[in-house]
Image 1 (cartoon, rainbow, N blue to C red):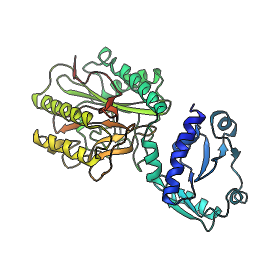
Image 2 (image 1 turned 90 degrees about the vertical axis):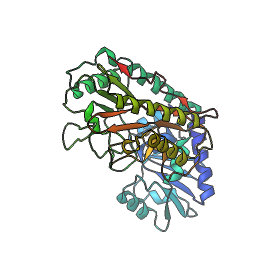
Image 3 (image 1 turned 30 degrees about the vertical axis):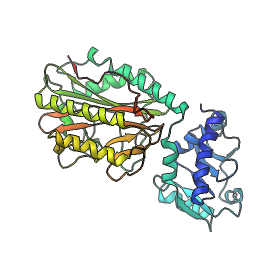
Length: 388
């Protein structure tokens, strides 16, 4: 549970941005946003005024919300007739998270609060959430260390002849036994992920997922992750998984090989380590996200691997790092067009990867925290390929 002080710190930062942008407050209806500020994930709407105390209105479960949340004023969600009475007539401009709120929900609240202007506060909300407090960083370190402990067990059960599905099931079983919550929350529309993926050379499949590696999946309805393909010797086995503990997500990838590895794949892996090393050293406050991506892309091209950097040729992801926290796709993003400076306390999954058609997917991923001396490695275990 978050403390009162932690919640108040987050709310004060949000209120400062409201005042700066001329908003009278914000209505939060997306569950993970409500959780971030209030400490409960119950079905609720949170009102944070630009000045004054927040109000949590709960549909279900009111009992549990009162037991969990640190918000002082918690009430049952009122009727549509009573709802307007909660808002002073001077409240004219209200923030709303357009990035995740359905149009139906915006229409619903607009009708209950006629005459008010609803303004998109998505970027303000994501900016506040991108910078992690010491409390959050400790939860992320716990998530990272637990995830690493499961990765360390892979040589105990990985064997040629097992299906990708069997490999993923064994990994996920051990991860769940370690306390992984399983909810890989994502903000982006039309994206979904089940814990992670374990793929061999089928990692070079084309697919919808906005990442470097997709996997074949089990059907055309679930075209992502492990398939029933058999793991073979002398090919890269690519495990990319999330750890979700106390809501906080860490993300990492490691490569395993039963036998030997093709020299071209080894060269690509070495390039991924070089790119990661540069980015880790550059994860300092003030560094511009787009410039870091451009340097990573240039390094891939200098290695003769630009055509397969971050995905199948023609379908490459245009980023090399993404923020993580309560969601897998938080700010900041090391990507083309993201021209913002890093801030101390942001947490980023750095994932330079290559997909070579006909040979497989290879690369590295670790979660780092931005510090004044460079990236603090949160998923702290050796990066080298594990040969079995």
